[in-house]
Amino acid sequence: MNTPTSPARSGSLGRSSASVTGRSTPGGSAAEPAPGTTAGDTAATPPAAAPWVRLTRYVLRCMLGITVGTLVVLAVAWAVAVGVAAGGRGDLLAQITHYATMSTVPWIAFTALVICVGAQVRHYVHAGFTRRAVTVAGLVGSLVVAVVFAVGATVLDRVGLGLMESALGDELFVHEAPWWALLGAMLMVCLTGAVCGVLVGASFVRWGGWATVLLPLTVGLPYFVQDVLTRSVTLRGEGPGGRPSWLQDLQDALPTAPTAVLSLLVLGLVAAGAWLVLRRLPLPPRASA
Image (cartoon, rainbow, N blue to C red; front, top):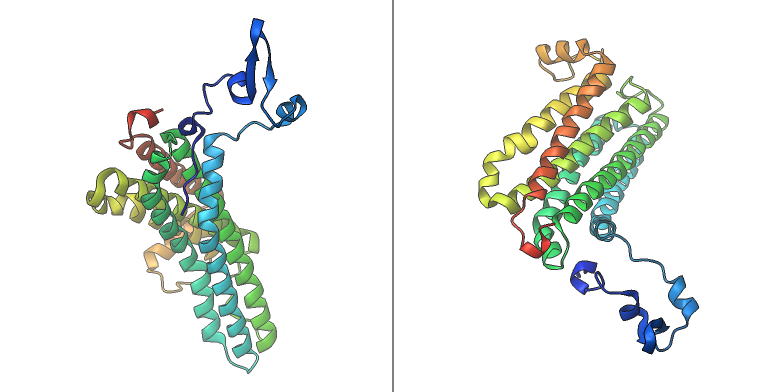
């Protein structure tokens, strides 16, 4: 996999316009255009994108195959489930497919970001990118990937359940919560999973195998709290559903507005942790900005 080259490494920063686009004429006159170009071509050349923008694009290209591939697999699974339901069966299969869609996607986002950050950060650094560019690209990339995962999974789940209900001619176990509440909950869980992936990947780069000891703090506790908060909205008033009675009572008692604030706070704390770890990675002096 080719790693993008930072402008800082390529030497394009710090040069004068004359040294890049042409050569100075005697007497201090304006620089002549480079051979094969005209003054108009030189003036129309767009400026190079910021390093973090270029790196973010690269991260998103790396994640594109995983994201699209996962959604394609889920779409095939729903197509099979709808086909089975057309034969008059499928209630249990609908529950299995629903669980696979809404419960595993955040963990796929988490795993993908752990691999991407843990395996690629050193390559980005050797290419000349700064810690600031690596940090911003990791967090922005994780947010974009999480949004795509959440929206894609929620749409597949809603459409798949609707088709299965039509095929069975009966109402399934679908949540009574509105679609926007389910989408909001899925967004928060996927965002937390993706940002936790960045934090865990950076922790393994920073501390090596000792980062395993930190997993209860870097992913276990944040994800558990976020899951409790989001399910307090999507499962409100729907009975135990396999939950302990104390957890059901807690989730039913949580008001929606404070729950949303707490959910955003958890996400912000995880993102702040990822920012701090990435900004303090032991990098070469030339990439320490």
